[in-house]
Length: 257
Image (cartoon, rainbow, N blue to C red; front, side, top):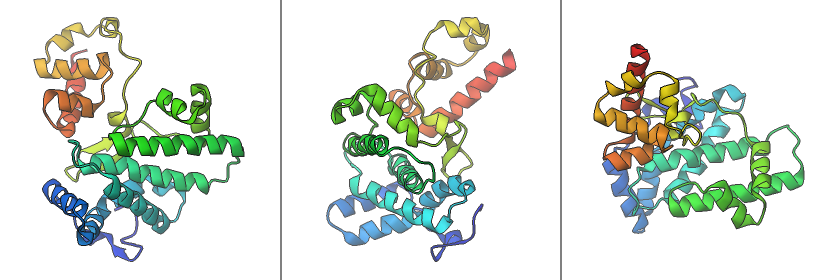
């Protein structure tokens, strides 16, 4: 581990990890009124919180504080998770935990931001969090702007003012099988949608040598600008499989050219 074993009095080396089936069962019990199920969900997902907190270890912040804040995000995710939608709990919980930690870091930042700008940003974040809870997806900037009655440009400016730069290759979660989930894996590509980019890069031949499934994954990801979760739902495989197949296909193209 990259941080001390004891965090908030918890021996992180002995944290319990729930399977997807166990998590689903506990969520059903919790939504049926079981308080003990909620406690089991919290303790069974502390390793998830820890994996997120470790990504902020270079900020110079107290890890105990970040762990406690991350646990608040976990509890919000448990309370707001919608079982009727076909989404894994960890996929929903990780952004909630990250959001809670980033909110804490913003509130404790030494950088001075105008009160009106901060207020606009917090209004936008509140709308974003509520929309995510109700729809299991993030709203667009236009949807946020319409909800709070501000021009889209002001919403973008306000959110940019309080955000920290993040590398696309920053890992945000690992499933424990050595396959981390990176920021770029969860970002929709809205620019590289022109089909001519393959011709411009002179890799037509390399793409033709890929399997039909690999070509479809790359087409959905880079032609249609879909996220890995959207591709996974369309093809009928897991997000982790999409991630592995995408990386393998791109590596094959690199080797060919």
